[in-house]
Amino acid sequence: MARASRAGGDAATAASAGRQSARPLRADARRNRDAVLVAATAAFAAEGVGASLEDIARRAGVGVGTLYRHFPTREALVLGVYEREVESLAASADDLAATLEPAAALREWMRRFVRYAATKRGLVGMLRTMVQDDSELFDRAKSQIAAAARKLLGAAVDAGQIRADVTAEDLTRSMSGICVVSGRADEPDCAGRLIDIVYDGLRYGASAEPAAAR
Image (cartoon, rainbow, N blue to C red; front, side, top):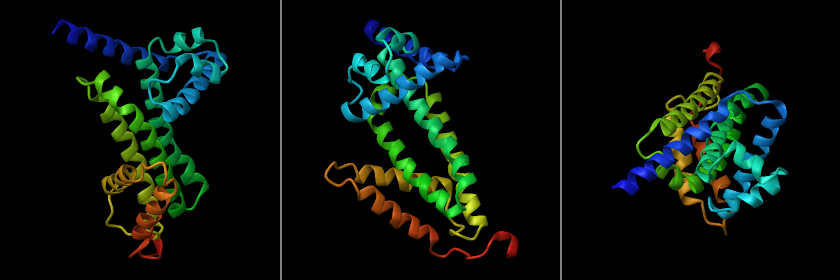
């Protein structure tokens, strides 16, 4: 019991350490932190969460002391990678909506969701151990992603480019299902083909005219 309590305390400390990174940083410190997260994302995807922290620091072009200054534990680094991936996926909805027509923006976001989910799959075991008594992390991520899906779906429906009877939950569940069945290393194009099938289904039965013209 004491060991379990200590583990829970260590996990809570790691989660807290990761969240403290939201405090304003100097420009150079922010660049170093971002470089560590980019390197860690690649390393965890290739080698799992047990990847060498020293190698991650080297790939990021920083000293290992700098890595530990931003992320004092492996758990804090895992949390930082996960939060960065969620924020990047959610924020990309605005960027895509501003640069692509609505259906194309939705399709590209679907592809990004699958890439995000692949990263999450490698981290989720440790994350659940870290925050087993605190669902706030996952609830917040789910809310951010659902809001992005609603934004892109709504714009595409209003433009008459996809059917109107699909919800954000339908979309994210479909993308999650694709991630489950397309994880084989010998079929790297499987996810792309499945996304195209789902996307074609979204297009089927679209009104073919913008909402303002109906």
